[in-house]
Image 1 (cartoon, rainbow, N blue to C red):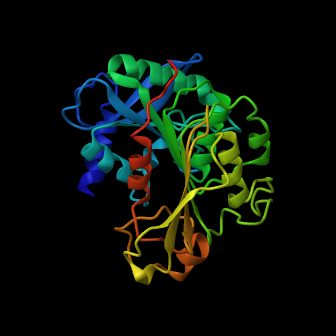
Image 2 (tube, helix red, strand yellow):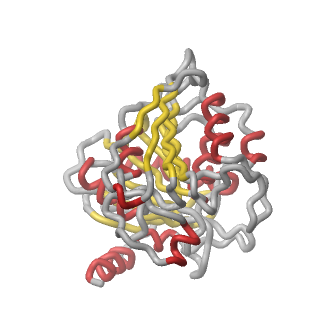
Image 3 (cartoon, rainbow, N blue to C red):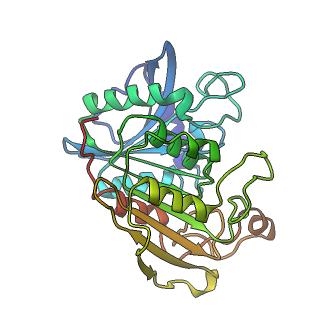
Length: 322
């Protein structure tokens, strides 16, 4: 309760424009004019940041607007902010747009999807440019991540915009077939993918999502598509099995590392055997209700997925000028 009150007080203190508290640690809400509209975002900044600090762009899925990310879901923005505090990077959570009304959650309260590249690439680009200037973000160390719906938005940004990100980490991605077919101009970007083989929401063999009717690639096919698109060596990946740190969780994590060919970028694929929709997390509770297991499946506790993502991404720098 105390943490929630602190977050609310910080949000109420937000000011127009890029958040002026470039030296203030913690969560800050800011606003910026992009495309003639006032757009909102959340920024988490650790204490005592040096110049040339990295930035992680966190794209949420279909949640109730950006202010929901301060909840406690495994692999969410709270976990990313804790990692940001330790590893000294800035975390950016932009607000999304309601596709039906065009409103953002800063303009209307209610359930709103997160950012989509089609309508918001200009907003994100403008925001990143301003943060490079105002917060001394290293333009060559900007990373993007997302889970489920957020991973689709991140993939959309990777495929639809000029090279901007040094690396990306996508969790539980159901890649829409239409989006894959639009990526002819994609420039290879170091990429980490993580899937659960028992994820009830991301198909392992189905190609049509039951809820939306949208045609998507099964996760195995999707991983192969990214390997080819990234110009990575598909024939001989380095295979390994992560330690089984919690034998009770019913899951194991396999890693396949695909090295980059000339002009390409590496792809790291983590397959969580027996894992469900949630991102693996060591601190996740050992028990789950039957309803939770039916909806999301098992949560693996053999590793922290976001730590694996950051360890992968942080070693890369963008080779081209953004």
